[in-house]
Length: 297
Image (cartoon, rainbow, N blue to C red; front, side, top):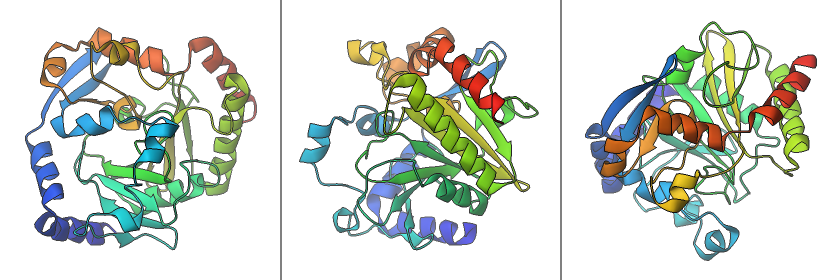
């Protein structure tokens, strides 16, 4: 599968100017790290992410535009690689990381993790050296009307190093609240994720799906899952115009996307920590869910 993806990128970079521009833009992106307590966050200035960062995702706005993940609306140059009978792998023309992929469901169906988490695990196990992420329809998905995942190279994936060796279900003193699940048993992990989603829905009153971002990696037969329960979609600084940032899965995993140069220059470690705390689930609710999840682990 990795060889086929590499060949897809080679063909598409030659045939699809928009992708070639995106790859070039990423190559010239500026990245700097900041220290927050005991961990680093990598701030990445990527101007071509402006449209995704500021995308209107309310129901009315989404209904007015054609779905850009449906096959009939894809650019004529865009080519996909079948993963299975349900998902197709595409090169993302607005990359945040190397080998950034969009993995779209073949039918136009709403962005929901229910009954799809097993597919996410399968993708992670087949995409060696990649992470796979899911952005909920109200917290990061710029196509909330079409089921999809994203994936990318783990050459830079800070959360993996940050959590290496941890065995608990939470990550202490991490500025953002995240559940950490590990295991070799696919069915057991699906059951744990289903329970976690159900507990979050109970705690937040948000159904059919609570606000979540999910990242998965697979290494040496073990899946590692990062589940970020969200308190809100965008931070207050986005709405005031102070900073044009809208964190989703990749940001929460430690690659913080900043499309505007002035924001890249001025954003601080304290500001990022405050944004993480603001958009993930408040501590009291998070600890309540964690306690209930651990009792059933």
